[in-house]
Image (cartoon, rainbow, N blue to C red; front, side, top):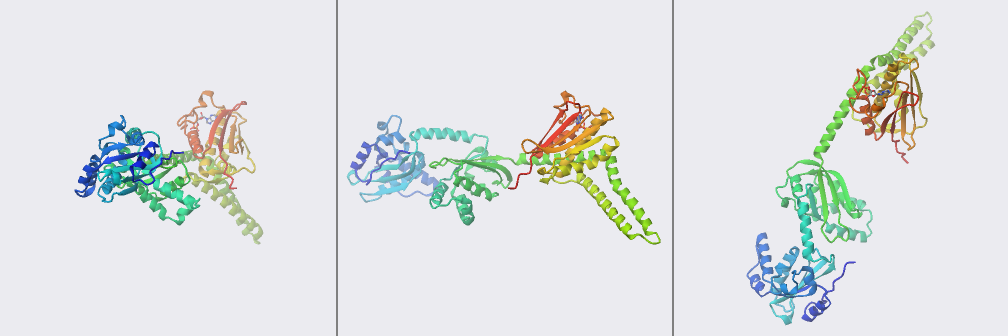
Length: 561
Ligand code: ADP
């Protein structure tokens, strides 16, 4: 609990002040304003610079006559009360509220009433909701005014200690290489407290009904300070260009403002996302915004916003993705080239069937009594074969087509069947025994069908080549699919080729690693990158009975329930 300072109830007599001093309640000052009064009556200030000069003069001409212990502790000189007597209040009063103090002194000093009193809410690093009161008492004469500040103590350190630590922190922030903005969002803290008191729980729904609150927040939450890196990022000529409503931050991403508000309302300590940022000189950047909210109660304006320019990184990533896609496609086409004989054979089969069935049906038709039932049967077969040929061509085209990777539910067993299409003939012509054991009722995986086909084709080609290289009469390749221990879908291919030398096991997934004369060394590297893009993995091992085994796994499609 913050310590609550008491205050003079009716602040118009010395006795009250002395009692106050006795109890060391609110800080109070007795000031001699004779000099200030003559200056103030000389006329009001004009312009911003004029105002600053005027404030400086009023406070330089108001001298400390007396202070209580509390005032000495909070903002006093190092040597204590004695050192403060006779000195201008400007030397001790916290700069955040110089304007307020000067204006109230001027108002009281020029008010003819012997009971003149002025009160105002001010900001302070030390006190919560501080209220400044300046007044005159009839006993003390026209040239003496009193000032006191009421409020709960936030920090027991003195103002100047706090100020020094603030300065250190400011310097640190200013020279940080990351763009940082300091934002005063206390208004929204208060608005949110009120909404909560009124029973609002779902701020998202509330903002849908009251979009004007977002506009209000963008206007009333203010950037109070920015560092050099932030000025540079925004293309600002100087920091002042950005000081003001936080609106300028969310011009290109209004939805982000809404999400930041929701995070603030929900009491989260921070919020981060990637958003578009329109700079002052008109560039459109991709930035990561990270907002850190103050811990409630929010007395200090310490909401900090960090920005990280991702534009170059995202552009490079996109280029890299494009390059990878082009490369994967090139590798696919090159593999298909290697498999041309096998594919041609696959297409020739239905074509040959069409040819034979068409010839036979012609013969049936050219009889004296055409057997139409037979012709219908044969034509049905022709249609089926034509459809099959069409499907094959379609799949080959899919393998060579350029398309952005998809993320769709895929049945891995179907992909295995489709991949076999490209190699069946190769496998048969080399008299390799192929066995497949496909798990029943497997969950689907989310991914790109063609890329997954490519992985299986690559692994199959390697196994077929390894078995052929071993030159045994009993070449075997086994494929299986199933469920892994963590619910992932697993594909395994085993062969009885020469296996992989132990030293190479770590290197076979590297790009351009090959032990083949005609090899490119890209197949497994591409398999690995496709698996990574699918949040899966791939591994190789040698089988105890000889030969290699490759296993890849993919997360199962999440259960919609
Ligand atoms: P490439 O086939 O062009 O050499 P890969 O990346 O597909 O490129 O394979 C890299 C290397 O991994 C091969 O050269 C081979 O040495 C080894 N390898 C891959 N699959 C097998 C396998 N089934 N049996 C033995 N070695 C294999």
